[in-house]
Length: 120
Image (cartoon, rainbow, N blue to C red; front, side, top):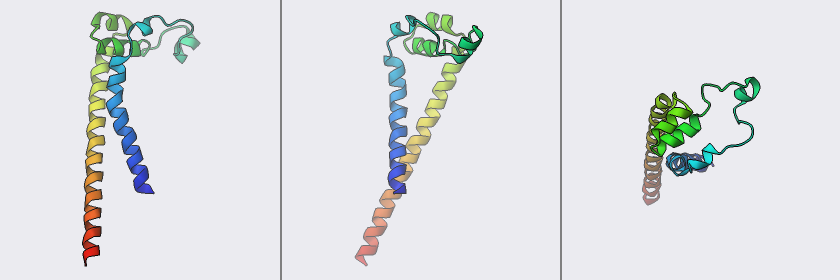
């Protein structure tokens, strides 16, 4: 049962690792500019002032689409945060696929051991 759960978690990690950049790139940039109503930012709703992270999502999507000037207008800190987020994503992918490889090798070793013990 533990092995099945480990494979399920690994599958979810791989799905996230592969889909996160695709969603960021495919998200329509125009839909972010026409937001109406209250902000989702709790800090801004409580204080009336934007927090340091306000506009970061819109800036990330703009950077992914290559619209640098728009990203700069949304949040200037995104130019430091975006490369960091990309690096963290690459580390996450590396560790996830390394775990997948190790689990596959362990599974093959276990199957080979079982076949060897059955032959005796």
